[in-house]
Every structure is written in structure tokens, then in C-alpha cells.
Length: 195
Image 1 (cartoon, rainbow, N blue to C red):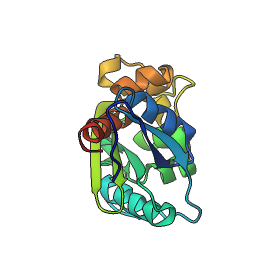
Image 2 (cartoon, rainbow, N blue to C red):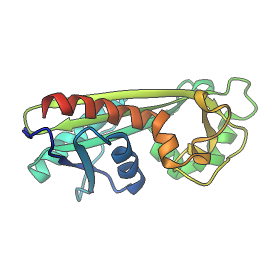
Image 3 (cartoon, helix red, strand yellow):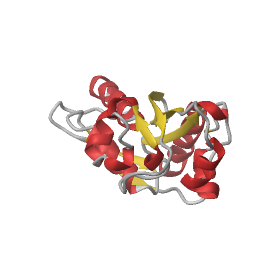
Image 4 (cartoon, helix red, strand yellow):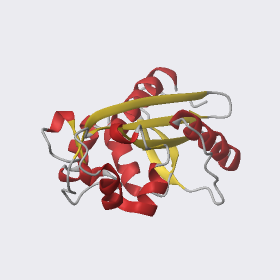
């Protein structure tokens, strides 16, 4: 486990090849004394599970075994009410396979447009395993909007945005209200008191 003086910054590796996730994490962690850099573990296998917490925890433990230092893993999912929570933990696969427009076709003309993004950040240092989860409620738009963000951001309007999609926002605006931003802020609060 890391120990630090209050004025020092801890740098942790986030297991991802997605630079946007690293940017969002660092925006959320401002002032916490923690910053993240990207690290990709060759041959990393992702656990298939029904919970984001299990997927993120497994990735963090595996990443520690390869890197031999404290690591972070983040997993997120898009849970659509009219599809009974699908794609959920399988969001990346559904995005890669069907894309935004394919998911819109699955939702169709459903009057139930409610959806939720969830995120779980896992920290593991060889002894301590902690997870930090958060979610954001919103609706699915009828067509994609915006050019920022990634994944299903162009079709998701969080409740706080008044029908503006995550992809219509700057990264800082999105991170201020997003599931991932809140999960990393919770990590930062814990890290300030414990690392």
C-alpha cells in the first residue's frame, strides 16, 4: 500500500487502452492527490460476470499479478429499462457488434426510454481490494446527438442535462455528472484518507 505526505501525488495505473477513460478519471480525481496513467496488460482476459464489481475486481487482481504494483480497473455498463437491463455488463460487446444505431433499433419506438449508466472502479495493491460504484439515470434519445465521448454517449441524455447527450458535452461537463466521474471521485475520497 502507498503512503504519502499530504502534498504528494500518487500515480496509479488504470488498466485500459481507452485514453478517454484516463482523461475522465484525472478530471474527477483533481485535488485528491491521485492521478492515473494508462496501462495495458498483454493477454488480459475479461471475466464474464453479471456484475460490474466482479469484472472490475477480477481485472484489478489480474493486473496486479502482471505489474506487481497497485492498479485500478474500471468497468461500466449501459442498462436499458425496456430491454430489462440489457446490454448491461455486455455493453462493450454490444457496442462493438451492433453500435449505437443497432441498440436504437432494439429499443425501437418503446415509450419506456429510461436508461442508466453504471461504473465500478476497483483498486488492488496485493492486499487491499476496494470497489467504488456509481450510476447516473437518464433517457435514450431517438437518434444520436453530439460528437464527443465514446460508446453509447451519443444516445444517452442524463436526467440532469435536460435532453442533452453525454456526446454533446465537453469531457469536463460529462465527468461532473457521470457515473465514471462519481466512481473515481469516491476512489479519490478513499485514497485521500487511506493511501
